Image (cartoon, rainbow, N blue to C red; front, top):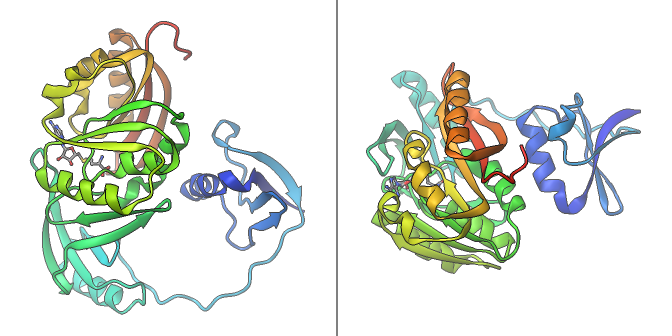
Length: 321
Ligand code: SAM
């Protein structure tokens, strides 16, 4: 008998992503369907607070053996048919690129990422192998996003975060996404919930792609794209239920303005890249502004010391800690 996470099938996708991130799924065994529920085999039992279900003992089902996949060494992100790597060693990068093109994963273009630049966070990309075709059709969480990797910022590493945030939004919420890019948070949310999201970005190419992305997805809610500097225009919005602030190296200086637009009890979903001490310092600043920290979570590693953190803040004194 093995420990499994028992979860209703409607929450299965979120649960599997959370467990995958923490390495808690035992891949030697299959996920079992039991009526309305899924039983996910666990390598270990993660801390209870993070678990979206109940841990039960169940007879395990050994997984069918699959052929060993061809090995591709090196790290990279995949956005549709495009792979992007920060590998600095030219020989290793070339080998990785050839491996990816021949991997059968549908990769047709491999770019080197020289880092993000300026306010718009656009990557400095150089084609290493394959076609120079920077516009990708990318799928995550049941939606499609058109992304031009040379003209807009986009990170597939936030797919789970976007799904988690979508699952917290209630029907009817009024939301501002201050740094929306091609609409990745906004469209994830509106595809799942009848909410209204004003999605602002300073990059005209991102707002143009967001307009396309609104049209190619089936949405329950509405997304209103706005081309503007949100740090100047945020005060035009009042009584919001939620404000999303995904500018991980610069959002902190705009939290005070964002609070003006938030109703009492409304929430800010805030992202920052920093080390653990930096995060604690920042949270103390937010408490002094009158915000309650409802949740803080590591999203992914960024460097040896730094992490990307997700923080949910509630405005006002009635908020629960
Ligand atoms: N949230 C998006 C996502 O996850 O795909 C994009 C996040 S990206 C880190 C930050 C975005 O903020 C970029 O698209 C950039 O153009 C935009 N941006 C930066 N400064 C801005 C400002 N003052 N007002 C509006 N958008 C801004």
